[in-house]
Amino acid sequence: MSSRRQRGRRWWQSPRVVVAIVCVDLLAVGVLVYALTRPGDHDHGSSRVVAAVVGGDRRPSRTATHASAAPTKLHPHPHVVVPATSLPSPSGSRAPKLPAGAAQAVAGSSPGGQGGSGGSPEVTAGGAALGPEARASFARLQNQIGSQARISVAVQPLGQGPKQVFGSDPPMQAMSTSKVLILSALLLDKGGPNRLSAEERSLAVTAITESDNDSILSLFADLEADKGGLDGASTYATGLLRTAGDDHTVVSTAPPPPGYATSFGQTPWSPSDEVLFFRALTLGCVIPRASVNYELGLMRQIVASESWGMGSAGFPQVAFKGGWGPLPGGYGVRQTAIVGSGSSAVVVSIAADPATDFGTGQAVLTEIARWLHAHLRLRPRVVAGCAG
Image 1 (spheres, rainbow, N blue to C red):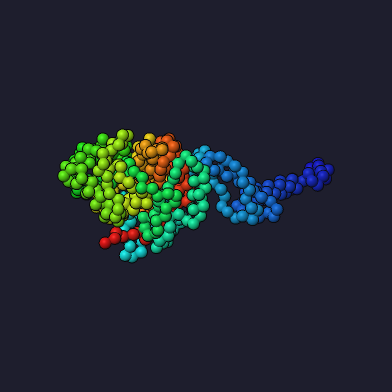
Image 2: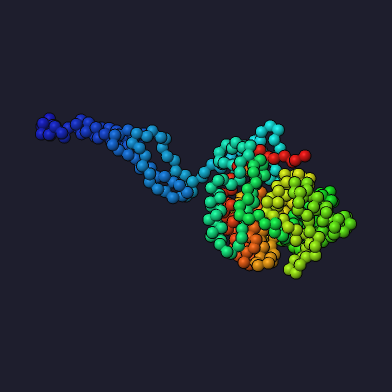
């Protein structure tokens, strides 16, 4: 009976054939799974889509067909964890290296400068702060301002480089820029900021950062007490100008006219002569280094209400002092500043003499400062020494 049943079955119904077919099927499935899951896809003409996670946003990006990169591992959280970047220590900054024998970096400045990107930029022996294209550009600025103001710019690198003057160079009244000169004289007389009384230090802050007239008058009274009165104090301050190389400017002793508070504010002081003094001051040629640092620190803290002009043009570092007051036929507005840091710094004096009114003068100086921001070449230079 069993042999008849066996003879009645078709060949594909044989148990051995069924087992063989199942084995072949299982083997095919295994080969397919291996082909789909092995690392590295070498099929020509095909590509893999890998989920790219950037800032938590998953976006598909195609990987080349012959790429052999390791499989991408996605972070289980919605944001990618980026390894922390090691920031260099201050001692490892890329500050320009001055040649052997050159003076040290400017007092009160931060390391480095704006002399270029990547590596340590070369220190140049000199070179102007404004390139040859600045003349034509300044003429266009003058035409733009027109009759609103008569403008002037004087500029010189803190390091080696020529002084440049654009527009007029009027011996206009020093106004409140003279407060830096008077504070310098008092610091020299007293022996530095640590020798000032607590009250004098408080007055120095408001005199420079807020341009407070009563504060500078109180400080000048202390200088007068030490130097025998108005003439002695003014002569002492004039001596600082001589030390800086200015052989003609004399600090005024005339009574202030209506609208003014100080005698020394009436001193005729041209933009180019202010550059001469502020440059020598910053180099440490006029008063000791500790006093320079103290004074420049105050000039970097000008209050917001007086930070138009050089304080609003976007310079990464600027120490400045402004002055303003009525003039015959208009209003005088001026600022002198040290722009930049280290061996890249530049000294600038700008003026509207006169402008039609104070508001116009502020706006004009802001336009000049923006023009300077576009044209100043803040690059490392050999730092100039003091004459004598």
